[in-house]
Length: 114
Image (cartoon, rainbow, N blue to C red; front, side, top):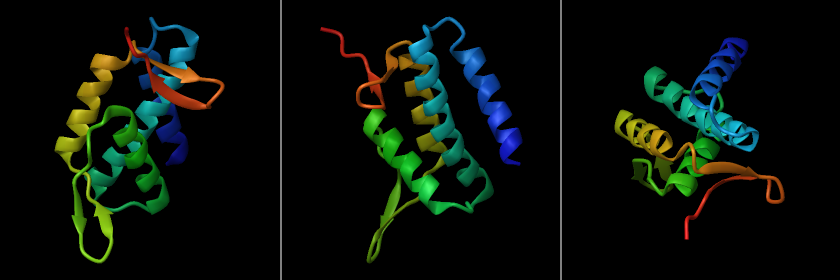
């Protein structure tokens, strides 16, 4: 299953990032990976590794400034929805040429135009 997921992510990143410089390829692959983790949870309704889901949601929220749906009881629980995924995908489509891998911080960043 993981192997199929990696192959799919690789193909998607090649298609969606084919005209971007190399430093953007890594950034695109990372963003698509995190979107895929969340999308898998939304489609299945569960996930085996809750830590991965949490990390993916935090990553996407920080990069895109689009918040995931959540519920608050004793603790805050993220409950991403199809609407969240559509928002993140729309953001990615609009900004994929502006994201890059920052080697010094080892982090995906968004180019800030001045």
